Image 1: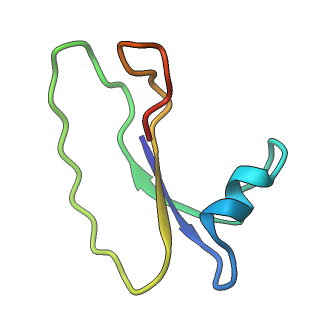
Image 2: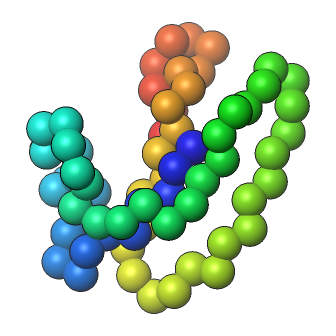
Length: 66
């Protein structure tokens, strides 16, 4: 799971329409190495702005969920 803070004028639509490469913002944190049947917690101090939370693990039905 990763958290991206968008540049001032960028949106989720901008992010989703880009080809692979650098996102329209900066990664600010996340969690790696999730194991089956484990719980992870993340505490962030979000400043005013627009963010996306990205999860790279598919749900049980195989679809991406975040």
